[in-house]
Image 1 (cartoon, rainbow, N blue to C red):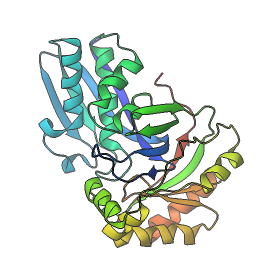
Image 2 (tube, rainbow, N blue to C red):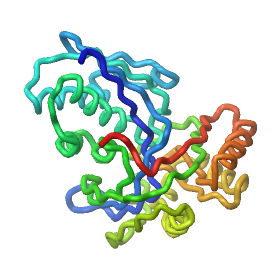
Image 3 (tube, one colour):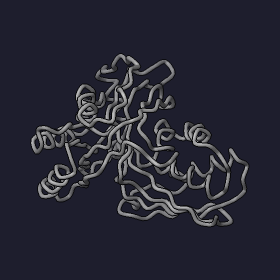
Image 4 (cartoon, rainbow, N blue to C red):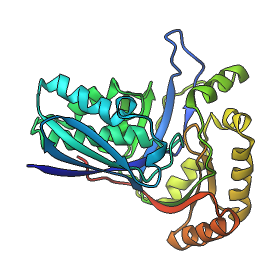
Amino acid sequence: MSVVCASAPAKINLSLNVAALGDDGYHPLQSLVVFAAIGDDLRFESAPKLTLNIDGPFGSNLAGASDNLVWRAARALQETTNTTLGAAISLTKNLPIAAGIGGGSADAAAALRGLNTLWQCGLSPRDLEDIAAGLGADVPVCVQSRPRFMRGRGQILDDISPWPDLYAVLVNPGIAISTKEVFARFDDFGAGNVLNGLAPKPTKDVDAALAQLAMLDNSLTQAACAQSPAIGALLATLARHDPTALVRLCGSGATCMAIVRNAAAATQLKQALRAEFSQYWVVATLLRGTCSFI
């Protein structure tokens, strides 16, 4: 096989419960994660050595190749499998950078999947998740890109199946938020929660899923709003436009989302927000209850 293509869907934290900083320097967490129907695109072509080309709407905002998670994922797979094969990698960056929707982590996971196929390494999804754990806390869950309940540092992944498709509108105000700085604010507030370890109950029913989500939240919201007041204003705007929506911060921000009842409601909200915020990134998307990366 000389050419392989892979998608890197946006990672969406439907809930994010974060505990206080542990003695090991990490924050234990619990998070219900799903993946959107939008994302970045990657292409891998056989080549004598590794190269990385980045384009797309947000490609110019990325750091150099040596700092990119795709590059690091490729190197990690080479080292694990002892391969000397190379690849010409193309990354089309459709998702905003430092946006709280796991774009870099999803790209790294897609690189592991794509190169595993291109180089015929024969590694299982679990093998790839083990490699992904060395690249970042959010990378393992992106390998299979299906609904999971994350625990620990993000390395403990419990399946949530079945889970329904949900409709959402994602909005990013064009502000890059540092996850490290948001967690520092979180620590300053002393806002760490007690984690009960209880995962949401699997369900096929949309109403049952929404009822469970209504009882959950994102622990980082206060810290992110303190870091950037525009986030708080955006969350309030989403709730004003559709009072029935479940409005949440995505990850550590600055992307915010509104989960709505159906595709028509998502389209209507998207159009209203684009009219009000012409400079913002606004998309309506499906949050998938299943995925094909297994």
